[in-house]
Length: 199
Image 1 (tube, rainbow, N blue to C red):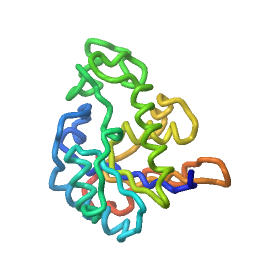
Image 2: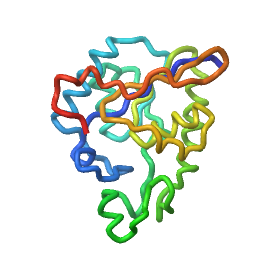
Image 3: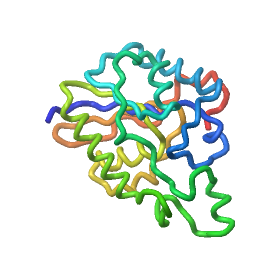
Image 4: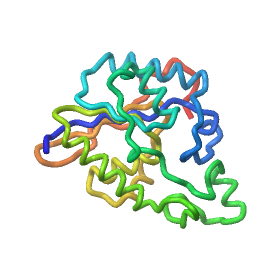
C-alpha cells in the first residue's frame, strides 16, 4: 500500500452542532454559517489535487465537500458515516447525564447503536481504502468518526479518539514519518477566523 497522506475535513456548522446534540444518522443540513465555512474550506484547499475524494453521504458532509470544490470527484462511502448513537441520537451529554450521571459516548453502552469499536472497524476499512489509492486522499466526514479514524491511524484503540477535540469546518492531515503513521496537522480552522465562533 502507498504512503498516502489523508486530509480529513469535518463538515460545517449545523443547528445540532451549535447545541451539542449528538448527530449521528439524522440528516441535518448546514446552517448559513456552515455553508460559508464550507466555501472557506474550498479557498483553503485551493483546488488541491487528490487521487480520491470520499464523503459521508449525509447532506452536511456532502454539501461541505461540494462547496469546497470537489463535487465532480467526490464519492460517497458508507464506512465514513457518523457514529450511530442509537437511543441517544439528538440528545446532549448534559441532558443524558441528568438521568445517567457518569454517561459518556466513549465509555457507556450505546443502546440501539454502535459500540466505539464497531465505529473503529469502519474506520479501519476507510483507512484501507485510502491507502489503496494512488495518491493523497481527502475524507469529508463527521467529528466523532474522524477522531476515531485518527486514533486507528496511529494504532490506538478507537476510544482514544476521546483525547482529540475537533471543531466544525476544520482540516487535519494524517501522514507519515518514514514508515510510521503520524498526525501531521490537527483541527486547523484558520480559514474561518474572520467568521463567527465555530462550535
